[in-house]
Image (cartoon, rainbow, N blue to C red; front, side, top):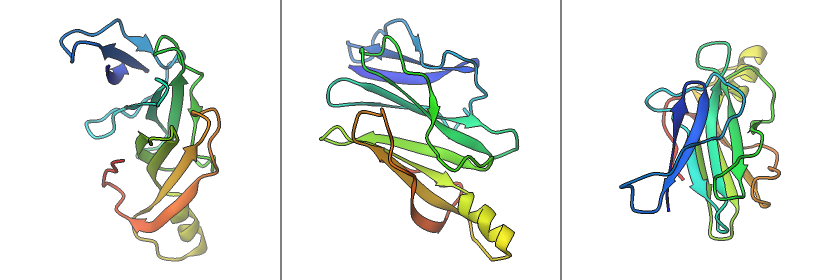
Length: 166
């Protein structure tokens, strides 16, 4: 099954194909409430499929200031017919840049998310210390996206506009 995700107005939607993309089923809304979604050419929603057929979707909800946002997530356990209420995955609660997420599932069904995060830049600026770029943060779930581990930093001083792949 081939899955695609895109933005329709202020909603994230998914659809799937069982004939290698020649046709697709009716799209399903991932977001029930309208959101300001960051959907520029290099910041599109991501979709991944779990080992038991779960459908995971991640995207960035645009913040109120330029270049800010939150990493959002929803999951389907019924083959993409319905999705959980979307939630924010970055756990700092700061109105800063959390963007350019990447989403992946390993062979054990563990879900991983990685993104560019500016929480350490904001702290360094407040402390009067230099800080180049942003940081790379991640989280993971061992229960199919029901819960996520606390956010962890992988590396400081990463490029704030590079894209991540898993």
